Amino acid sequence: MGTLRGLWNRFPTALSLFAVVSSLVRANNSPWIQYPDTGFATMTHYDLPLDFIASCGCSTESTHFPTAAMSQMAYGSSSAYGASCGRCFNLTLLNTFLSTPPFFPNVTNSVVVKVTDKCPVSAHWCSAMQGKPNQAGVFLNFDLAWPSSSIPDDFFPSDASLYGYTDFGVWNISYASVPCSSWGGQSNITSFGVAPNLGDSVCCPTDPFTDPNTTCPSFSDLNGISPTSAPAVPSSASSLSYSSYTFLLIYPILLGLYQLSL
Image (cartoon, rainbow, N blue to C red; front, side):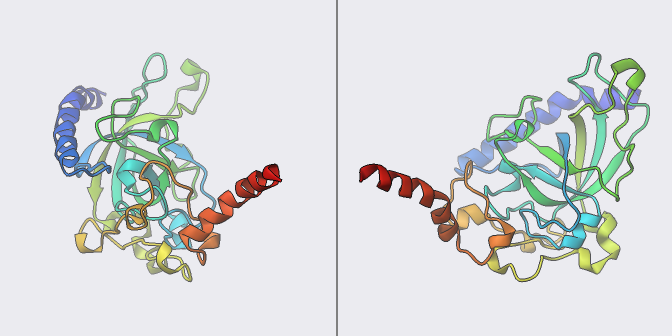
């Protein structure tokens, strides 16, 4: 308990360091959040079906192991793949902060995840942007794919007798970039790489932390798409170009306007 509280007390220092990094990035006119290899973040969780192809386009086998979505502006793209695709992180639960009182668990639970998905900037805890943290005061949110057969059902500690519920929804965590050799899927070669037959709309390197040359570019930057809002290219429509997909979205609107003009 004392260790966790001590770690939490050092949180403002970490934020100050992060602000320095953020200011350097803004000087380069980049909209994307450049995060240090270790720091603090928030964690939420979401449902990800087994064998689902998420934003990065990683192998469907990756869903059989711990994965997470990263907040959009740190993920590095508003559509398809971004620079954080394929990276692995060790995530450690610290405490809750929306509950009264805050909950400091008497166990320390950690999980190593691979980033395979994007948490959209429109989502509450994934809304951080350059110079503007989320409501918890941090710039990163990891949205854990959970429940998952690869993560214990009791991964998130609770005290139902005190709070009257077991799911706090959002946690303060610490994170550390780690080699993907630490990830649960490392022994299964089919859990790495991209889903087949999806062309250039996917990017999921084996371990960009240890091999930075394999880091994905930003799909939205490459295609001139706004970094903060854009329709996601669905994996099932991978044979469509982004412009074709956009046309399909706006076609009903154009048709309606045409009919009104008659």
